[in-house]
Image 1 (cartoon, rainbow, N blue to C red):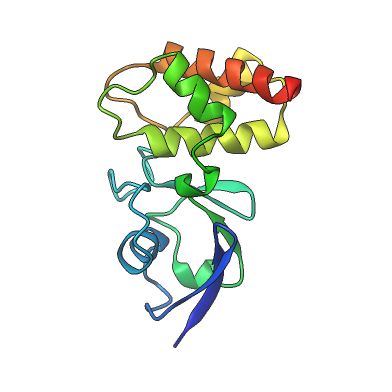
Image 2: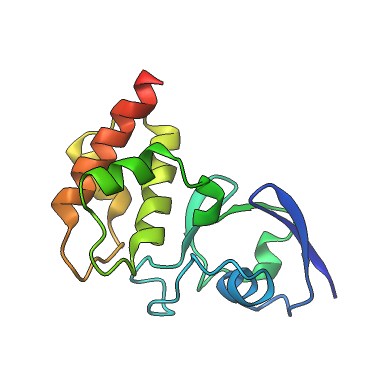
Length: 152
């Protein structure tokens, strides 16, 4: 059975079983390794991607449930996104493992809220674990990226 979905703007087909986690289709079938496996239980946020603009945990999302949907991964940000610039400016990355999930959660927030408060950022980023503890840098980077996006 072939399932079709849009990944980063391109139509792709998956021959995986419908109950296969989206994470494995993204990484193993499509070779997009920016999305990380962290806990496998949707608790850490490392596997966060967008499905139709909403941040979801791809380790617990079955590919059959997103057939025909638009999926965006961290590679879909394009390498020149305001969030990526702010991440570097505020020296957010430490070990880097959580970064793709953090970026995708932040991008989902900024797509809906162009001027988030600290509480908005904290709520949107809840469930994204950073073992290095860069949460204050993440908040500052999200605010800075929002400012850059409003100025553009």
